[in-house]
Image 1 (cartoon, rainbow, N blue to C red):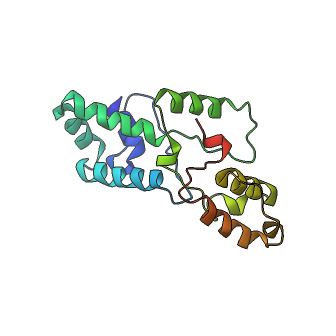
Image 2: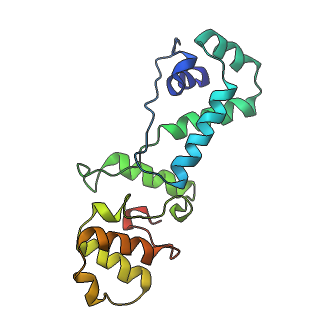
Image 3: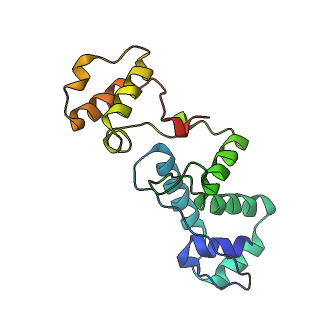
Amino acid sequence: MVHALAGSVFPLCGGGSSLQLSAKVTHFREESKGASEIDVAHENWSDRLPAGSDALWHWCLAQDQDMLLDLLAYCAARTVNAVQTKQDCPANVRLRAADTLATALSVDMTEWFTPSAVNFFGRVGRTTIISAMAEAKGAPAKRSWDKLKKPALAALAERETAGTGWLPQLLRA
């Protein structure tokens, strides 16, 4: 199983396996601590793994159980897709399963994601931005916020929510 999944996650290792397993790797568009950490882990594993399916097979046979479980965990982590898109409905099975997984693993998204003008505030409506700032500050919305154009409002929201631990509702535990 490790050989088959690693072959899917690391194309240079080849995908030759008799197991009919494949992994669809999740790619992140935005910068975040979590995306950076997974990129670093990918580089570290890429440096360890040999090229070619046969070489990967022999490498797997030479490893202890802990190393194989670590690689299996990494390969599984690369396939988790908890990104909500506009097409997703609230009852989406994939998103519910991702929420269950996050709860089981006690994932605290404040450690991995900080909302910014690029990755969140620039993509939501003015009402959501203003509500986020008021909630993060624990104070009513300011009238001056209504006068700002959306790009300036998104940039202000990034500054106002920084360091507060505020997260969009869908990322909260």
